Length: 256
Ligand SMILES: NC(=O)c1ccc[n+]([C@@H]2O[C@H](COP(=O)([O-])OP(=O)(O)OC[C@H]3O[C@@H](n4cnc5c(N)ncnc54)[C@H](O)[C@@H]3O)[C@@H](O)[C@H]2O)c1
Image 1 (cartoon, rainbow, N blue to C red):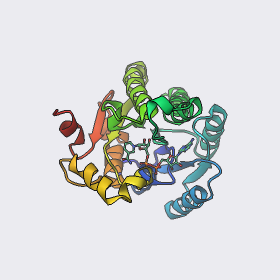
Image 2: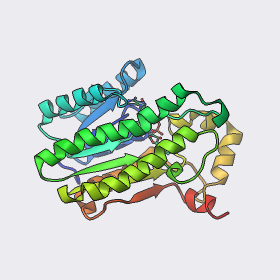
Image 3: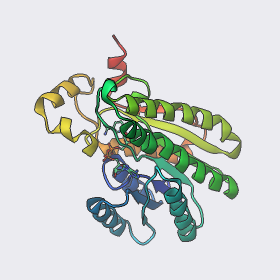
Image 4: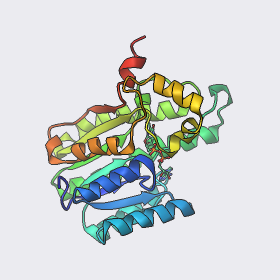
């Protein structure tokens, strides 16, 4: 039980990587705040089912991370339920595939709004609370290998994840005096709903796997395992780092 009695917020936790992190953290003894996007019936059902599985010290909160008022309301709920926050996982993310010449402002702003602004707002509100508590904390961003590697037709996504990379590096310096560790996890190709189109297309799947030295997609639980380490006391001297969970994809792609 690496996270016993820690209070952990996981954004976008009703599916994929976020759900795996929430489940792993609960197994490690943490009280988990399962954030999900408001409005989706499927999301709500999934989040409630997770909470039921975790037990009474879990909390499902609907909040759109791209809206400061929603995030502030969520944090108020967390404090009223648990009295503190120890760990924040910035996982909520979206991508829109579009050639750069055709991207509309609304699409650009939606991707940046969730992935970059959302990560900023959640981190700022959580970090302010952690500073007030006075005994440190952990901020973890689920960025992407595309914080570095170009991905044509996904310019807003790459810009958002590159921005998250630089935000993490800055915060690791600014928040070190408060003993708040700040790190990124950069997944490669993980089998989750965000990749459903590729997973459903045998040719696209084969091509994607062809670029991965490990020869398969990653599993959400493999990302959650690294998150559990970074959220634990074992990582107290780790800050300002990106951890790749990509089966060697980054090394393969940057070889040429
Ligand atoms: N799956 C991959 O291959 C992969 C690779 C690199 C990075 N990532 C990153 O991992 C994170 C999780 O993605 P995933 O693969 O689990 O896909 P996913 O689509 O299952 O998860 C994304 C989650 O974010 C939630 N979300 C979206 N907008 C939100 C908002 N405004 N407020 C709150 N929640 C919101 C969704 O409801 C969903 O639960 C994302 O940030 C994604 O960019 C995934």
